[in-house]
Length: 193
Image (cartoon, rainbow, N blue to C red; front, side, top):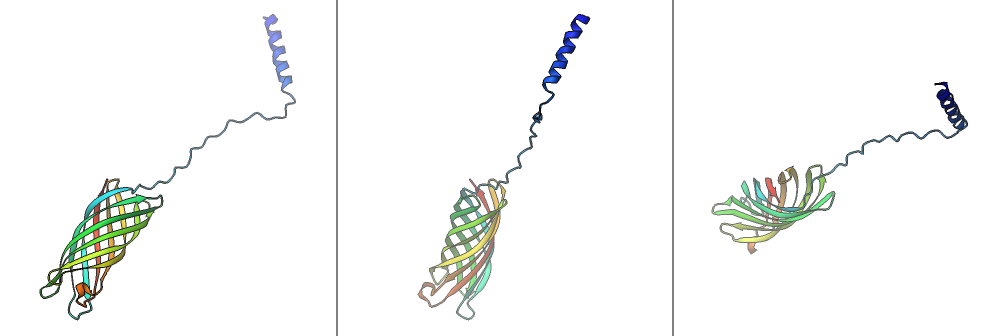
């Protein structure tokens, strides 16, 4: 047993002497830390269809010719997600029965709109504007424009809820010298695909 012990001890002493003046510290194992999660926002790119319901107030430059009532209809469009920004185009068609004077009422409003906005989490804060056409019971229809703003929030990847405030203007409505201003505020729900 001594025959084997002596060589083993000699080997251990030689190994210790070989490392005895080493100035390089042994390398430490690297510490792995998980990467911070990257905040992501939903992708708004795609088509949508839905409905809206709200309130409209119509004023004219003729005394006593104004009114307000419920307005609502259908929306459709397409949005394109640019990262933090979203741009899109859409169509709105609203039914109405807003009495302005005896025998005169606004019956529907059609809009072709552009919108652009900034994403805030699952929401989109946007500005909008475009072409509008209003049809009345006795004065015919006329073209005008609208501007406004809104907020839409994705409840899921395929459904959003939002609200929109629009200001409309129709100058010299159907060549009658009547200037019409209308403000609408509506809640909307859209299915996205």
